[in-house]
Length: 328
Image (tube, rainbow, N blue to C red):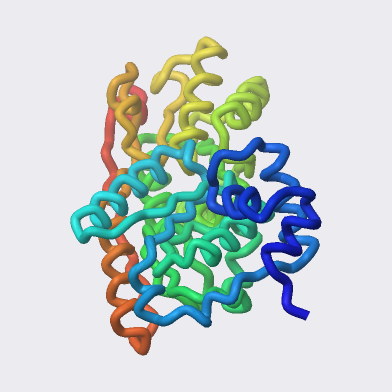
């Protein structure tokens, strides 16, 4: 039996128009939005988008689904994609998952409901390895994180190489107890962790790492405890800007000097990393180029669905600043 939007409305105890507004991100209360999401999942509702002509689908908005809008990298990525879409006269539908697979599933459903032409997608780790089993009715370009083997076009940073570059730099500055602070929810963090481990192994050093929720508060709490150890690290590498910020706060709260007592390096050339004293050594990601490239790949895929799957790997740039200076 076919499930319709009327079935969802009955299950949620709301009107059909309320269901439409909730799925489209319109003006409804959070309580109603949650009831609609639960009803969608319970009924298995799935709009029949394939009945719509291909030309109509191609004219739809471009979807952008990111993993954590609080992360400045994704904020910059969204701006780059939106600017390119505006230049080409395309609309953008933006959603944020906060690394929550259930929220992600709901927004993917919304993208189908809104009849998007295609999707630029930074998936949660939970969904990354089942993308090929998802019956999405639009082309997808993965950005920042990509599964293996590749099933969709993707644009990523060479994460392992970038993190290894930071570790090698710290080793060259005389650091030996180099600690790694990595996010626990993304393939990006895992790849950076792999680069850290490889560089530590090549240098003959013992790894010391933590995998945490990718937030400033989580990093601050963990590093605060870490610094109380008798053999505390003499350097920290953080896998994103939020974790880097938490490391900095913990080091300052402990009364330690950077770089005299401990060096600090990480990812994302956010403005604050240059303005604090000492300025922080970072890997700068080519976010604008990644956004533009993702949009270009998506448009090409729309016009030529038979193209082979493409993976664009970009290189980061290590910006060396005072936070990793050698101890004299």
